Image (tube, rainbow, N blue to C red; front, side, top):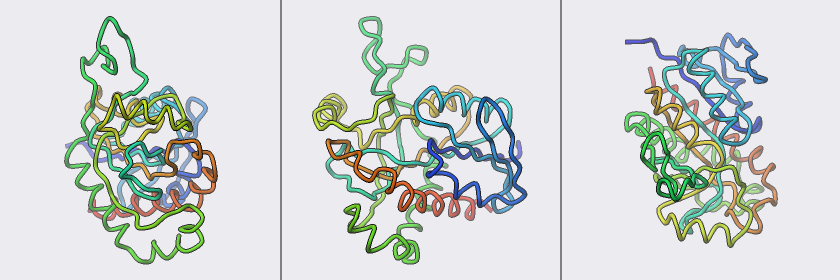
Length: 255
């Protein structure tokens, strides 16, 4: 069996810088305008990289991780906007399936279908999902983590009792900050829990190359007219801590 090499991605520096600092024996590798940081986590080889926003940036980054750095699996962590009314700020969504909400090649093929694959949804591999599920549950049960983000952030961002949700995530090159757009998406895709801009592109490249993947998103906003308020602050103060804790837990359980 090929030795494990884990790729870890985030779209924005605030989502991933703390994970880079976790690496032992850290080295920086430049490729395609990005810095890929190699090292080990709990003795397991890993590469950590900031992809940038959007599907193209994400696809380019995961392709480099696969073809140049030979990763054997991928973890993407970051934030997302809530689409489902059952989600709250601070909740964590673990993707069971991913799709592109802006894929539309009608009348040639059905809306949302990926032309070369003939399918709309890409399923997350079960072993990786189960490992991430345990890691997230442990994080949410850790009172030290909860106390570190606590009172000021809970009041500031409206966080109550963060929960884990498993379900569908939609990706597209659009930041949802309009309530009407949110309702239109939910009407056409009622199973979608949240939206972001990279996950489905990463999932497609991984799927086509037989690379297991895990997509994890912390809910930063409600994808409505108030979404821009304190977005950057939430990532820095809350989501970055979640990403760090989840990655640390996943790797701790690999040995």
